Every structure is written in C-alpha cells, then in structure tokens.
Length: 261
Image (cartoon, rainbow, N blue to C red):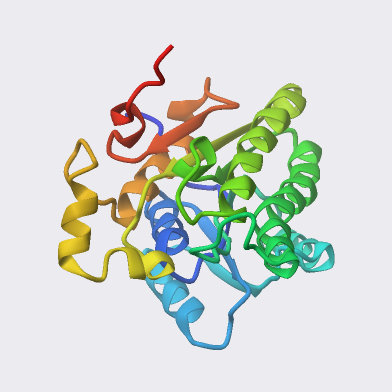
C-alpha cells in the first residue's frame, strides 16, 4: 500500500459517534484526514469523545448534529464543512436505523417510513448534496454502508434489508453518473459487527459462538474490520474501483449454500 495517506483531505462521516462510524472516523483521521463527524444524537457526549480522540491524532474535527432524512440539515452540514475546511473530499454514509424482528407483513407503515427515510433516502440526500460539492471541485469519494442483508435476505430484517439493497443500486447508479466528474462511489456490505447497534445478537457468548460457527473466518467482525476496508476505498490505492460493493463478512457470502438448478 503506497497511497493510504489522506493528508490534506477532509472527510464527512455520518453516524460517527459510535460503532462503525466512530471506527471509520478514527481510521481516516489516523491516515491524515480532517473530519466532520455527524450524528442525530449530539447531547450524550459521545461525539465530543470521538472529536477528542481525533484531535489527539493532530487532526482537526468538527461535530454536527444532523438528521440525514432532512435535506436542510444535510445542506447546513455541507455549508459548515466548506466554511471551516474549504472542501469535502470524502463522504462516508454510515448513519442508519434498524428495527429488528419484523417481517414485511408485520412491519407497520411508520416503521417502514422511518427505516427507508433514514437508511435509503438519507444516504441519497447526503450523496446528492455533497456530490454537488464534489462535482464543483472536480473530484471526490463516496462510501456507502450497505449490509450482508442488502445482498441476501435475512430473517427478521424486514424493511432494513430493503433499504440496504437499495443502497447498493444507489451506489452503482451514482458511480455511473459521477465517474466523468472524477467522483468514485462504492459500498461496503458488513456482516454482523460487534457494536451497540446489534448488541442483542452477540451479548450472549454462547449465541455469539453459534453465529461465529457460520462464518468461515470463525469470528464476528469488530468495527475496525469495516474501518480498514473503508480506509482502503477512501485512499488512492483503490483509485480504479468504483460502483463496487465490498463484502466485509468473514466469508459469509461465499459460504452460503448455492441454489440448486
């Protein structure tokens, strides 16, 4: 790897106060980027904690409260980023919601709207608003967070799987449209990652062991596993990759039983 350094770059990470978003923000800062970390929750001190860690890495950091389902919030975030840093080089769309345990037949309309408006529409709005900034500066890099259940359905995933599948096509469509403007767009599709977001899936060590037995690499991912993949996509080492969805799942996809003809 020769070009993982991001010195002089500015990155926005939504959902940056914990879990995967936090890990990605710290990885980008460690590689030299200045950060804007955004989250809908801004009153529990976690954004400030991440910002303090980034500043220990001698990088600048701006924290912003943003509801990504609101265009006006996203536009305000982008304006603030330009005012402080002058440009936006990297956008990582990590913010999302999951309402577990629902089938599509059971899913109330308000739950569908919340998941789709946040995960899919929110990612689209961030890509559109920040993508226009990147087009104006003749370059940029967008990384969207999908999921293994965006590639294959998952029990109890409900509207979440639909939103994550939509993000994959959104990524591919944008990659096609923005390639001529020197903007790359890719997605990551993590498997189960040990974060607060899905704590109920791994809080019981025995359940975690059972799930891990279905992963060829034999363990669940940590947030840093996803962050390192994001760092690669954010760097010039992936400069000829766009429109891709990269599974970060320990081999879960390739271990699935093939369909029989």
